[in-house]
Structure formats: structure tokens, C-alpha cells
Length: 582
Image 1 (cartoon, rainbow, N blue to C red):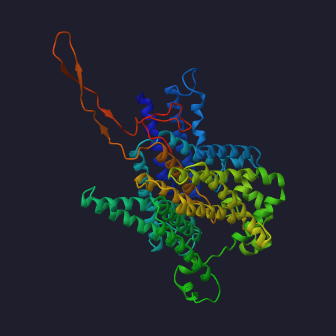
Image 2 (tube, one colour):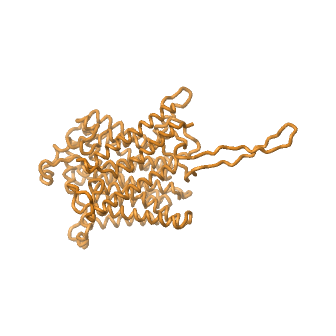
């Protein structure tokens, strides 16, 4: 039975992840020289430290920190390792700790650079948030609170972006690009990268409101008000994304929307819809390819406001950075395997930047990121870090499809793994065959994985086994989270992963796991009162009589719901009242 101290620790942990979801995207310090990223991460570290201390107190108070003989099977503690996502998260933590020890600048790798602060300490903070959400999120009320907090946080950020566009910003920012909004992130790419992860949740809430309105599950006035609010929020989010004029996040948003539609079609076995989505996406790709060719009939579209930047693909200085990244990796075979250490890119990369980069950006200009997560991972944590990074996203994609029922047997699992491995391999090799260089391998590897994922979904669309078609809110939420993670995976191949997007990635990963494994199909009521039971008792020499047995009210709340040992941090046996995972 949970004590008052345990309940308080649970509340404190949930308050911590809610505070992080609010503060990290929204906070900016106008009185600091580092107004944005570094101050956000300093707050995140403090919040996570409080959450971690609360969890330690809870474990010590409950006595779950030790394994008593005969009290619990040793295998129970390691059952969570069977979840590929949990195993990948632990492996990522170990890789960062090891590469920090072997780093060329260990202190910098541990604490992070002055401008970014994305060292091992920060990476471990994200992972702690992931595990603590897995450990404590057990009810739909908790999940709804987290989603509501995420959506409400995006409202002032989007509105502030609109204020900047119309010239009513109360602050004067130095170094901000002209005619592009930066909101509370300090960079237009960062704002759009954050918003594309929130847009899918807004679409889900809008769809729920419209569905309730059409089916009459709620009062008409309430459904209309909610649908109007969500439509307004979605509109300003999309407008703010367009006003940032950031191509990488826009590609990520389109890619996430494509996977959302394709997953809906495959999971509900709508072959016609799936074919239409695939043909439509091929038409969009062909349109963009023609638009980027010189002297085409579509040339006048390049003069339309926002079209010239958003619809024309131009790598700019990124190409020179990627060339330097390849030179950095091949220069030292040992470091190519173990990496130079987290946050060491500025020191390791800059000696290998070409003269073209200097002529373009000026003498003294350096690069602390490659604007491609694949190259960032290769330089900092080496080949073993890249394998772990791909295992993390591959595990997410695998678990997502498995929980959606699209990977249901060993044959499908083997096909999925083979396609992803071949996709990553050809994504690295094809650019080298075409250009005789690995400059585009940073884009090719994730692109090959996504193409392999599309191929698997197309195969599932036409050859999946017959059965009952699932159509539930749980399925829709899994698809929404999956598409948001895909959008993030695409965006970081052209930009930089920041505190807000990294935090939301780990939060979404935890939510996917909790929704699939720990939550019932329908939300549980706030209170459930058991009806009096009639017990027949036969007395000696007396007539049968009925005796009413009073039962106490059982409160089902976010704070006293049973915990399961599927989360790595829990040591209690799996509660049979929760729905088991697929």
C-alpha cells in the first residue's frame, strides 16, 4: 500500500515533467547573454534533479531498492529490457558515459559547451525524464494533462512569433534574421522544429472534438467551443511555421503528415486511400524536383513570397561543413570508432573545414554543429554511437508498428529488420557511388531508413492478414506520436537538435510506451463505487437471510494507480489488472 510520502513523491515527479514541458520551450532570459538554449538547459537539469531525488526517496521509503531472497524473481527486474526502446535508451546512456571518459575534452563533454550545454549530463537528464514518465504515468488523466500542457505552451510561443512578424516585439534582438520569426527560441529553425512536434497533437485534439460533435457524445456547445479553439491553435501554429521560412522543419512536417496518413490507411486496411497517398506524395516530390530545375515553366512560382525560400532546396554552407565532417571522421580511424566526445565538434571539426567555408563565412567563423544529426553523432560518439543512435530510432519505429499490430509474427519482424538494415546500407553507399564521396551519407542513411519504412508499410497495405480492424483513440494517439517522431527525425538531418525538441522526443517515446503497455483501452473513471454484495448465510435452525456487505469506495486516481515492473525503474511484479502489451 502506498504511503503519503510515496504519493507526494509521485505528485512531485509528475509536476516535474509537466514543468519541463512548459518551461523548456517557453523560457527565455532577456537579462542573460545566453538568452535561450543554455538557460533552458540549466532549468531542465534542476527540474530533473528534483524529480530524480523524489524517485530515490520513494524507492527507499517503499523498500524497493533491494531484492530480498525468495521475494521476487531476478528475471522480473530485467523484463523491461525486452522492450527494444528501453534497451536502446540504456545503451545510449552507456555510450555517452564511455565517450565522455575517452573524450579529447572530457570536462566539456560532461558539462557541455558554453553556448549549447548539450553534454552527457544533459543527455542523461533527457533519459531520466523518459524513465520517470514510464515509471509513474499510469492513467489517462495524467496523459491528458501532459498533452494539454504541451498544447497550451505552444500558444504563447506561436503568438509571440506573429507579434515579431508584424513588428510589435517588445524586445530588440541582435543577430536575428530579417523577416523571419524566432519567438522564444532565438532561431527561426528552432521555433519551427519545436512546433512541428506539437502540430500532430493539436490535430488529434481537433479530430476528437469534431468526432464528439458529430456523434453527440458531448454537449453541442462544448464540442463547438473546443473544436474552434483547437482549430485556432492549429492555424496559428502552421502560420508561425511558415513565417519562420525554415526548409528543414517544413520537410519534417510534410514527412510526418505523410506517415500519419499512410499509417491510418494501413492500420485500417484502406488500400485505395493508401495508393492515393503514395501517388500524391510522388507527385509532390516530382513538383519540387521540377521547381528546382533552371528554366522550367514553374519558374514564376519562385517569385511568389515565401515560395522562393521554402520550395527551393539549397544546402548553402552545410555542404562545406559536411565535407569537413567526412574529413574529420576519416582522419583518425580510432576516433572514427569511439568518437571525439560529446560537444567536441567545434574542436574536432574546424581544422578540417575547407577554404571555401572560410570564404563564404569569413575568417574566424567556426562551426559547432554539422546541421546533420548523423554526422554530429559520428564525430562525437563514433561508429558505435551511430549504431546506438540508429538502434534507438529503429527500436521506436519497430515498437510503434508492433503496438499498432503491423508487426505481429517473426516473419514480419525479420522483414522489417532486413529492410531497415538494407535501407541504411544503401543510403550510405549510393551517395558514394554517385559522387565518389560520403558527403551526402549523413542524409542518405536516414533517407534510406525512411524509404525502407515506407516499403514495409506498402507491403503491409497489400499483404497483411485479414482480421478485425482496430479503430480506437489509443490507436490514433500511437499514430500521432509516431508521425511526430518521424517529423523530428527528418528535421534534425537538416538542422540542430535543441533542448525543446530533444525533451519532447523523449517524452513522446515514453508516451508511446505507456499508451501501448500501461493504459487501458478507455479512460478509467475518477471514482468507481462497488455495489453492495448479497451474501447468503445459513444459520443453525434459522431461515436463510441476506446480509448486505458494505465495501469501501475505491478511488482510482493518477496518484494511487498500480505501478508495473515493465518500467526499468520499478521493481514490483506486473499488475494483472493492467492491459498487457502486444
